[in-house]
Amino acid sequence: MSAIVEINALRKSYADGFEALKGVTLSILDGEILALLGPNGAGKTTLISTICGIAQPTSGTVRVAGHDIIDDFRAARSLIGLVPQEVALEPFEKVINTVRFSRGLFGKPRNDAYIEEILKKLSLWDKRNNQINALSGGMKRRVLIAKALAHEPRVLFLDEPTAGVDVELRRDMWNIVDELKASGVTIILTTHYIEEAEAIADRVGVIAKGELLLVEDKATLMRQMGKKQILVHLAETLTDIPAALDRDRVELAEGGTALLYTYDTRADRTGITQLLNDVAASGLTLRDVETRQSSLEEIFVDLVKDAQEDAA
Amino acid sequence: MNPTAILAIYKFEMARFFRTLTQSFLSPVLSTSLYFVVFGAAIGSRIDQVDGVSYGAFIVPGLVMLSVMTQAISNASFGIYFPKFIGTIYELLSAPVNFLEIVCGYVGAAATKALFIGVVILVTSYFFVDLQIQHPLAMVAFLLLTCLSFALLGFIIGIWAGSFEQLQLVPLMVITPLVFLGGSFYSISMLPPVWQTISYFNPVVYLISGFRWSFYGLADVPIGLSLLAIGGFTLACMTVIWWIFKTGWRIRS
Ligand SMILES: Nc1ncnc2c1ncn2[C@@H]1O[C@H](COP(=O)(O)OP(=O)(O)OP(=O)(O)O)[C@@H](O)[C@H]1O
Ligand SMILES: [Mg+2]
Image (cartoon, rainbow over all chains, first blue to last red; front, side, top):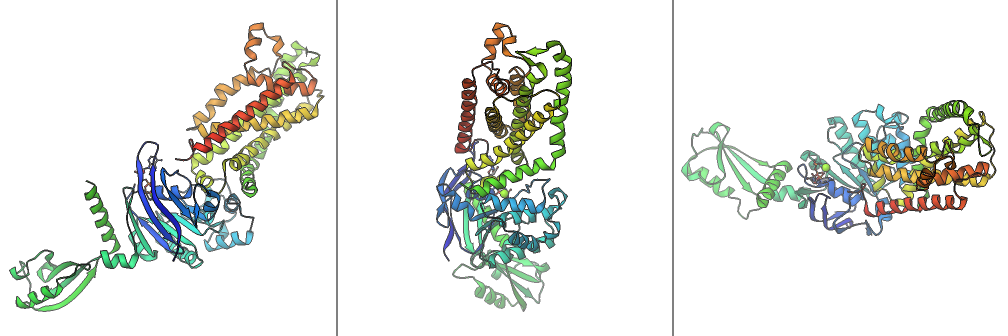
């Protein structure tokens, strides 16, 4: 896949001198769903705002389908749709009018059939003549999405689309994202919900303190970065770990009826064979063996912790 | 240029106006009528005539200007401040439009509203006094340029303002005094010499004088100077706005 958004050494310092992006380089692939994870204040919104033209980059370049976001802003921006983190809508306007406005603002001729299609897809068609301030919070979020889609963008930025929405709407949102992907739209979303990234993203990027710590294929990330655990259930109940089995990363679990061994799938030797041999040599009886893989969340927490320790 | 975008902004802004059309229409009608009752009938009965024009008729151009200026400023400043305040400005900043298109949309809409109110006042005056317009073309030109230039000024104020108080402050502290002291209700020649001299530093004097000239052929300052003043003022506002968008001042972080 080719890159549709190319971010190169992007830095952003705010007026107060705070450097929110410290040289981000990232290629976003055409047609993918990229999830950006990162703690509060990591710089996710700043990254999106800079790409979309809301904040001015301090240095570095961004190209969208080959168009520089500064020199060729018209071409670049007309390809981009943005759903901001905060709900911001003209309160007294009708739903359909704000969506039509967005399309016009991006220079596209009026197309009522298309507007109808997106409003229906977002379950807003029945509410099209309602005033915005008569909508629920979840519906307002959908209006924001409708506005972002009104000009048929090729790249869609969703800044925490599911923050504070109920489970049902989150599912809806995921379905919408899936459909958009199927229609060829590239989607970049930020989220604090790891399960969200796990559920819908193709790739995952992790940002902390203005730096992109990694971007990785979701499956690879989970495989490579994932710590696995093996839980060895025993017929006996132990009070201490037998000396032969005492080693790093072995602990008693399940009230002494099991041994929990944590290993790194990336290591040359996982140490599993040795452990199991030692269990047998110690005269213990295996009842069952199960493995557990750490979730993206644990990976993420570890990464951010490492980065913070490095910075300290 | 992106005419579709300009039109979209313009229509969206005008929609706000149409939502409150009754109010937009009634308040100038009411205030103009009150002016005529207070200034025209009560005071005017003692002043009688200014340079051969009845006092009631004499104040009409000033009244129109007064409303047009304040309306253009308040509409334009509110029009751009509101999106900043509620956060919808993100969309404008992320759209493929340049500053000229944004200005055309917002300022165009604000100027249209001011023009509408100016016309309403003119028509209302018609029922109270005997109006004559000697130079209709100049009248229209002055009216349009005033709507435009003060809408530009309002746009700048709206971008500069960091709060609703500031939004009200400039019109209240600067514009209203300038307009009231700009000869809306009197001829500069009626003032003592010192105040006459001071008045010539008030830019609004030139606008009201030029506008009144287009009605009655009466002017406090030469008409050419009036045109120059309004033209220069429009240009100055345009330059400031161009600079604002070039630097992102108060809009792009
Ligand atoms: N306009 C601004 N002026 C100064 N600093 C800012 C501005 N906007 C953001 N920041 C700072 O930049 C950093 C990154 O903020 P940003 O909003 O990009 O974080 P984020 O990753 O989106 O966080 P969250 O998950 O809370 O939305 C923060 O430390 C924030 O305080
Ligand atoms: Mg954010």
